[in-house]
Amino acid sequence: MAQFSSSLSDEVRYTCPPFDFTYLVGTKNGESEFKLDEIREMIAQNIFLDLTSDFAPHKRSIRDNIKAAWASQDAGGRGYPKSFMAFGLKFPLPKFALP
Image (cartoon, rainbow, N blue to C red; front, side, top):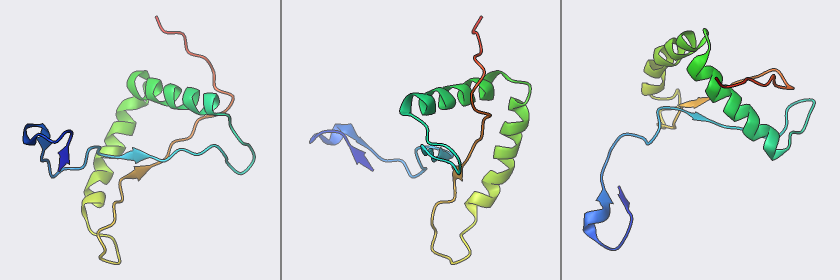
């Protein structure tokens, strides 16, 4: 439930999570530390490739297949979320020109 003001008319009740999956993004890997602008560019490039590349349908298919595993309870039975994803891109990123 979310309420955006003191009025009950602004109350939203919805049992599903707000997102199907979440990417956790950091500024460091084993070899480098990235600036915030570089992280933003990497995220933008990943979204662009996810929408336009020939590999995008395969990525969507993989995400759909693992959603079933997310629905099952974790091994300890605690019900923790499991819908976290990761992505990787070669850095420095090539620049893609939009038509």
